[in-house]
Each structure stands twice: as structure tokens, then as C-alpha cells.
Length: 351
Image (cartoon, rainbow, N blue to C red; front, side):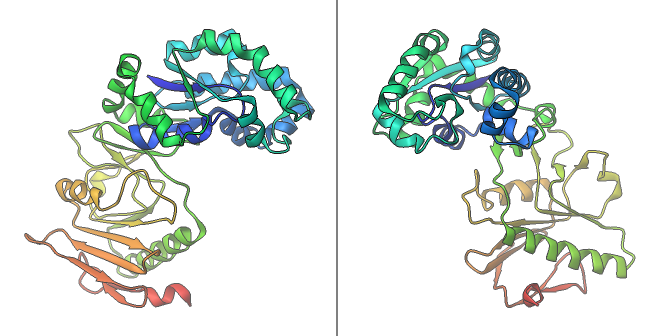
């Protein structure tokens, strides 16, 4: 079941959606963002070249595509003006109407250039008139209404999730996802599935990708030189850690797998021998230290956490009975425990 956020432009649907995703563990999707990514054009351009009717068709198609799987769904301001959209949203979850006064909306929409529904008229009177015109449709669709004026996204998210009388069914669904739900996610939505709960993955930045490419290359060069049987896979690469548990599928930044029987057309079933996670500066939906126990229980032999923010690499040799973390810097040459003669010199990252 989904939690769909509706309401006028500028009421805070996008920021509240992110706060809800963080608090609930449900993945987050934005209908307008989905359309832009699929079309490769900004919404004002779609309105200008194709017309509003064509955009509304794209919007309905996006809602239909995103409705499955159970997520926080941020809808465009005009989504509920089409009855078909309301029907889709109600059949697949709970609809929450976010409201704000015209004065608040005016402050948030800026010059209105990214808001084609305003028609280039960004005045308090025009916004109030358009809000009133849509009010009946919003209220008819809503299962719950929450005001956003003068409140933080976190406060609003807590109020929404606190309404157990309305949210119980949607929240009950968040801990029962399976591998099938993971593979049913839209192509542009990246999440990990841990114990039946989805966690959104933040987009990697340039430094993250630089480190990923460096490590992937170093490991591949070593394996090829040794004519080894192990294979290295950078993200995105799906790893179902437990063969008898379909409620955990992760996407480590780097997975080194030495048992070819674990490899499938979809990824890996069973624990990789070596996992590396690279921390991005943006906040993640779940921390990598918490995944330590998950990897330990699955039988991962070695786990690295590479953190460019603190200039630290944390190495866990999980085959030891009482393992200890080894801490290194980006100036060190680090021994890989699953191999006898491989060390990675992080100073080469900058050369």
C-alpha cells in the first residue's frame, strides 16, 4: 500500500515525502520527477510543446506505473483533477492532502517559471483563486488533511505516521516486501530490501564514483593477473544474501564473489566473499555499520567501509572468531584478507 501526497504546488509534497520515507523506511517516488526522467524534458517544456492534455496522460501513466510495491508517492498539483488518477491512488493506498495558505505558497514558488499551471501569473490573488478552484477536488480525494504552514517536514511526517487509524494498513505492508517487490520497482527507483523493508539509495556523487572505479579496476587487474576464479561486480548489482530468505536484497558498491554457483542471471544468491561500501556525503537511508551484522550473519568473509568524508577506511575481517575493525587512511596501503598477496595502495587514487 502507498501513502500518496496530494495538494497545491508549493505545499511541501516533495520535502514531506522524503521525510516520510526516512521515518517509515518506505521508498519514495515523485510523479513529476518520473515523467521528466522518462521524457528527458522539463515539465514546462512538455506543457509548451505537447500541451497540458498530453502531460496529464503522461501523469496518469506514471501514477499507474508507480502505484505498485508500496511507497511514498508525491503527486503533482493537478493529479487529482483526473478521476482515473484518484481511483488508482485510492485502490493502492492512502491519500494525504497537504495544505498551506496562499501567502506560504507564494513564498515557495519563487518566480513560477517551473510551474506551468500558474500560466506566468505569480500573484497572491491568482494563487488564491487557483487554490480555491481545486479545493473541492483535493478534499474529495483525501483520506487525511494536514496543514504545513510554519512546520518542518519532519513534524508533518510524524503527524501523518502518527495517525494509526488511517495509516495502519499502509504501514503494515512496509515490513512484508519480498524479492519480487524489489524487482517490480520502476527502473529509476533504487532501493535496497532488508528484512522486508525498503530503503532508498541516494544518488552517488563524483567522488563516490571515482573511488568505485579505482577499486573495481585494482581488484580486476589482480584477479586477471592471477587467472583467479573470483569475479568482481560494481553496483548496481543485486545480492540476495540468504538463499532461504527472499526479504533481503542489497546492492553493495562492490561485491567480490569466488563461488560461481552463487551467480545468477539477476545477480548473486548467497554471501559475496568480500563487500565494499563507499559512503557518500549525502545522508543515506540506513547506515553501513548496521549492515555489518547483516553481512556477518550471511557469511561475508571481509567487509570494507570507505568513508571519504573522514578520510578513513574501516576493514572488518569477518572470518576471525573475535574480529576487530582495522582503521586506515587514504594514504595507506591496505592488505586484503581474503587473498594472500593483494594490497591496495589508496595513494594511487590521486595519481
